Structures are given as structure tokens and as C-alpha cells.
Image (tube, helix red, strand yellow):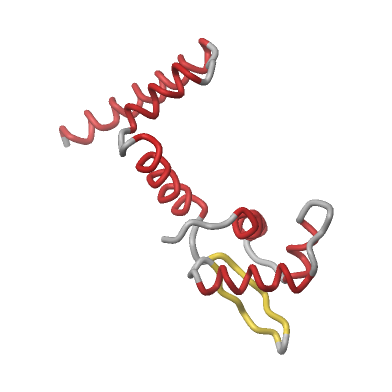
Length: 128
């Protein structure tokens, strides 16, 4: 799966949120200054070529919708992030954020609780 540019990501985020939309509707959700209609249309066509978006035709008008879920893209993007910045080590990534990001005690406790919950789920699943 290819990584998206910031502009592509901005548009697919809107489609994930709205489930579908015409170019005009997508532009309405973009921040000021609004890009030109042709610019947005071009970016959507690029997203189609990359396999992220498809469309339904209504005459000469197209309604676009996402083919890739936000969850699936996030998972792939995050794996690439960990690979590129933390040598494929989730442990290094967690360590970095715990040490370098000035996390509060409550944030670290929350991370610890999430990890402990997942450990317990895996223990239960491995015994079934």
C-alpha cells in the first residue's frame, strides 16, 4: 500500500468521515483557503489510481467513496513508521515516547493498563 501525500490524506480523511461525497462536498469540508475544484478532482483521481477511492457515476458527475478503511491504512502507515524510525521495534517506539515525550504519570499509567489488558487477552486466547 502506497503512502499518501498530505493533500491526499486530507481528502481521504473527509471521505472516511462522510462515507462518500462529490468533489463539491469534499471542498466544503476543506479549510480555507479552499483549493480549486480541478485541484481536488486531480487529487481524487490520484487516490483512485492508488486504489484508495472509487466512484459511482451519475451522468457526468461522480460520487466518490473510500475503498480502504481508515483502520487498515492506519495499521499499514504505523507499521511503516515503526519500521522507518524505530528499526521495526515497537519496544523502541514505546520507550522513546515514554522517555522523550514528557508524558504525564496518568498517560503512562493508561498506556500500561492498555498493554496489560492486551497481555491478558493474549494469555486467554493462547489457552483456548
